[in-house]
Amino acid sequence: MENKAHAMAAGVFVLVVAALLALLAVWLTRDNGERNLFELSTRETISGLQPQAQVRFRGVPVGKVEFIGFDHKTKGNVLIRISVDVATPLTQSSFATISSQGVTGLGFVQLEDVGPSTVPLVPNDDDPPRIPLKPGLLDKLLNKSEVIMDQVEAASTKLNKLLGDGNQQTLMTSVQQFGQAADSINKLALKLDPFVATMPRLGQEASATMKSLKTAADDVSRTANEVNTTAKKLNAKDGPLDKLAQGGEALSGAVETFSAATLPRLGEVADETARAMRQLRRTVNAVDDNPQSLIFGNGAPVPGPGEPGFTAPGEKP
Image (cartoon, rainbow, N blue to C red; front, top):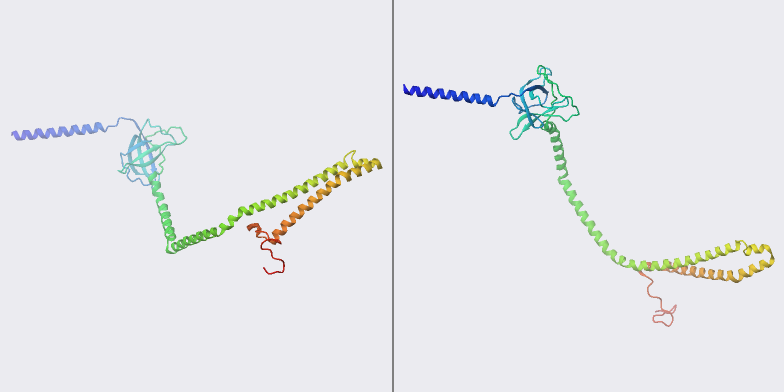
């Protein structure tokens, strides 16, 4: 009799504890907040999303998924009904996406509002308004996966062709040809070193020749300037020609002045011009007779009579 009393007491205790635990669970899971109903309709796959899943607005929990089923208004679409806190700032530009949390892969509804509209979304529990559901990052990746795989396959095919035996042989041949070309350039540079060494001397001789030509040109220019000056003096007012028109006596004076001062100077200028032209002609003849002198110089002069090494014309050396 006593054992039955103990068993009954234990059973009553277990029932009371179970009832208390049930009440505690109900109290912990109670939801006293006021919420509004909204609907989402999509043709996309919503794998991982379950009833009672969280609804977040920019990462903040604001509700849960109440129902998942088929949309009777749009054939073939999936209908998701969510309840959202009344304080959630939803507008007519708000939209939703399906996201996954962590490594568990459990889905939740993410609400966003990046649009320009500030008109609040009016709730109606009898006919809940619908929020657009846009593809999430995972959905976009899955939609593009086929294209990405095709591109990867095409790239691998091209890479295999590029690394084929024929192309590898061609590449090795090109490398060898580049090496041979480099060797040829080095050999050519070695051959050009003596010529490059003679370039400074050639430049000096060319500079001396150019100075001579410049001197001759300066003489000619100076002569031309003097002739021009003389002509201006002759044509100036009250000049020799003007005075020549005034009378024979002025003509005689002008002729004497011209003969005494200008003609000797013209003779000197003509002599200088002739000397410059002869010097230029000798330079041109020397280059014409011995063109290599521009590179190697004139060399030693030919010995004259009485000098060692002189050989008279017609005699054997």
